[in-house]
Image 1: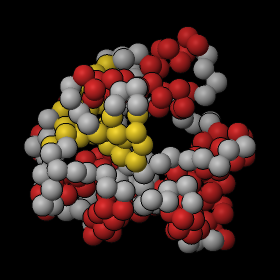
Image 2: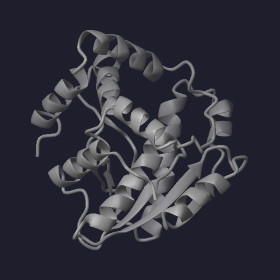
Image 3: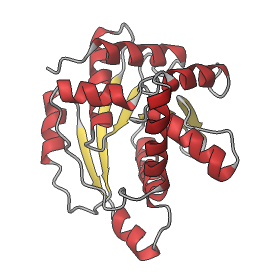
Image 4: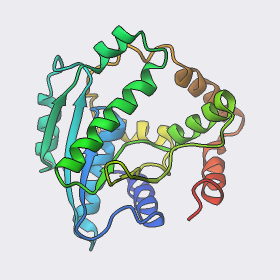
Length: 236
């Protein structure tokens, strides 16, 4: 069994409690990509399942954007080690991006994967979908929306999807990416997912670099952003 750092346990526990992310009898479908974030999310939810008085079920699923060229054996073994049912669903998202010459491949891919995941969750009776977005994702999304769209908007800890009648929850939302990187290294978690051919030159990646520069001047900047978000856009 994986030894999850206390900082991850605390961050996830606080987020789950603050936004009532998990309720008695929930069936939760975890969106698994094979990267550190979703892997840590699955481990954290499995830990919470063991220690929480609230009873809930977990399953994991990867929406494979390669259309089936990715071998999911490593992810399957990972889920089996946690005693979590695993589903591999292949869809040619990368090929569609190529054909469309999509200008925002990351956003398009994320929306496609989330849409597929939500549809399957509805069909299979899952009330909630858990995604591995963290505080850095929320901070960068906020910056992108402010500077490029003129909107004060970012990822939410908990979002209702009326079309599929499902909730999206983000239990890692209080944790900066650097904390997750450190935990993944400490736990020796390998990358098990398909490599994205479109992630090297995007607005999101460039905004991540800008955020890193800001954090050199303001090391507690993301935690300050968290406090501001909890008072405004994430107020309960």
